[in-house]
Amino acid sequence: MITINSEVLGKAVSTGRLIGKVEGNHEGPTLVLLGGMHGNEPFGVFAISEILNHLEGLKGQLHGKVYGFAGNLKALESRQRYVDEDLNRLWRDDVLKGLDHEKWPEARWNNELHQLVELRQELNQVLDEAKGPSYFIDLHTTSASGGPFMFMTHTPANLKYSEYFPVPAIVGIDKYIKGALLSLVSKRGYVSLAFEGGQHEDPASFDLMRDFSWLSLAATGCLTPELIPNLRERFNRLKTESALPGLVFDMLYRHPVIPEDQFEMRSGFESFQRIAKGDWLANDRNGRIKAEFNGHLFMPLYQKQGEDGFFLIGEMATANSPLDLETSSSEAPS
Ligand SMILES: [Zn+2]
Image 1 (cartoon, protein in one colour):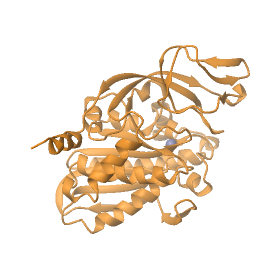
Image 2 (image 1 turned 180 degrees about the vertical axis):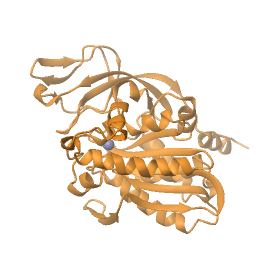
Image 3 (image 1 turned 90 degrees about the vertical axis):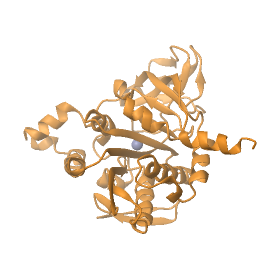
Image 4 (image 1 turned 180 degrees about the horizontal axis):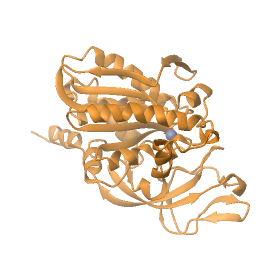
């Protein structure tokens, strides 16, 4: 067990790998919520813990099972993104095969490899035992500003599921980011996405994580929408805080970074900001880094650890939430 304190939230939470589990009285889907894959992003653990406590009182109406897991326990304890390497880049065949054949030398067994083994075992068990459809939601925060968004691989099931939320969606993460857990879960055929709530220590990010998680209970069918506390308010907050709600983007470019580059993003950039070809975005030891084409900037790096300097994304489609359609019909003149 670890205890995480949050000064901004004025709360503390104690958790093991399993934050909690609530089993409904009715058969139904399996929803897995994960928080703290990165140790400097503890809000997800707080949000999941709070929602699972609420759900205890709704067991009678709950369909299926809801699980909450904590990602990188040791990094959460020390409040850093990771201890030795990024846990959310390790869910790759080459790493996993090494584990399965016990071929990794002792020196390779750093903190994150241990975290991966434990988490994988728990997730496999939950997904293998699931009777109905399964959904995996990975809760994160970012160093950059720019509002909430969803991250996923480009599958029809993910696109369909993400329509429910009035938040921009980025597909094609697997083209540039290898070894993210959400890609592996997608590959196994489940709906799987990451929700990025906003900036790390901004209490508004915590609210948005709770909103997204509550809406997920309706989107999966674990609860009927009427049972979600303040559903409309949560939906509206997600929509208001989103830079470009309902837009689906494709990932077009990733600027990779290694420490020797001395990469430094120029100040003042935000995710989803429109960028024109030639815009001066960052500096490194080789000089100025400029945008190679028009698009939107995405996830500029404003923290020390990280291998992605920034991304460029392009508009691909628009999505309409069924909840949005309800609003417009109820607002129509009678
Ligand atoms: Zn993260």
